[in-house]
Length: 509
Image 1 (cartoon, rainbow, N blue to C red):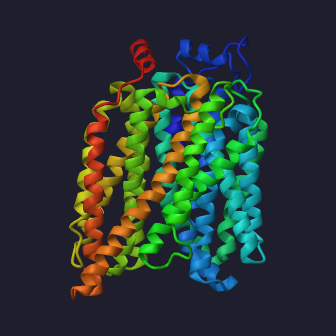
Image 2: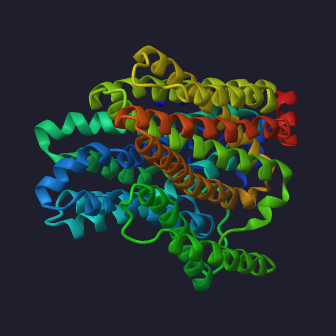
Image 3: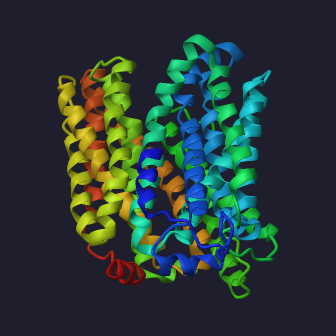
């Protein structure tokens, strides 16, 4: 991950003594833009944020492999054990909408220290948990810190990186969100054998503690703080709205498999209803610039279109990430290790290509990249629709690598094009909005793919098909519908424009 960040070192020059100390101040941003350079202190801030984001996101996907030994050791069922993942997702969905307020209120330094302190505390709590309840509590505390980190990273990049350099730096965000989840299960599997499930948290704990200490030493505020106070009603509405939506959407997939303990339509319906109240409250609070989540970001057409593409793409990615391993194991008959190895190259390719696509964005803008990229993702998902019980491993591997390359080429320019049209004081709210959409869309994609696959599989079994052929047929229908939905983004990509500031700075470069 750090290699590409360091590739920008030719852009880093020592600032004259009249400049602010390392870490920067709000007044330094215009000077940076004029000088077409990053200050060394700013480079350290971004590098540390990248490394920290990589660590907290890596932790997200370790539970998929660690869950069975946790269940055995603590004596819980699979339904109960899934709360380690569900509670994490719910906490992320609830906290992320508030991160715009937190970043503006606490500043870069305060938000970073809060995020890493919570993540470190949660990791330590999970490592020593004597029972399942304490382990879930540790995961919730971890998720609270994780929720702050990604919006903080994106906001900081938008604040201190000159517009014409944002593509290459923002490309590292794609590396973080792609490579870290891909390596999580691999790391977990390597640690479980010698150290047990507590070792999964034990390996991460010293890394997060070192990141916290480095933040105390290096992180400084790079934007102005505001003095607005937290609106408790907005926070409560966000909790019910986004928590209810993610809970309900996650439950739809379980309901299709007759495994949902609660009717998912109840939390989903409540979440949607309260979302309307949340939006109304934010619009009212915007008159005094005190909204928990500033929705005026949606007044920018580029931002609206980008969020739409983001939502559909995240649905496709999460749906594929959930359904593909299931069908490969249950229908094609591949071992879990083989499935992990098949999916690893695609995740690595997506991460490695992120910075490369970012550099290309700096040269040509978003549209020439995103139109073919959305078409590639559509084709790749369509290829999965033809999976059968006898499909070649190399066909699956090729389709997955193609999918990840396409997604890397979608997400990298999307972040820059969406946030680049906003005013500086809106960066934190725009980042929070994008990350909230990722959580909700990811849950929706998982629910959609699982529900379609399950319903179709059951229908095929009832018509006399074997269980393996039925699952392959159900997954094929899910991927086929997913490809049709993804095709909508090709048209939306034609509407994405390069932010004017990007054009100005690129011309000056």
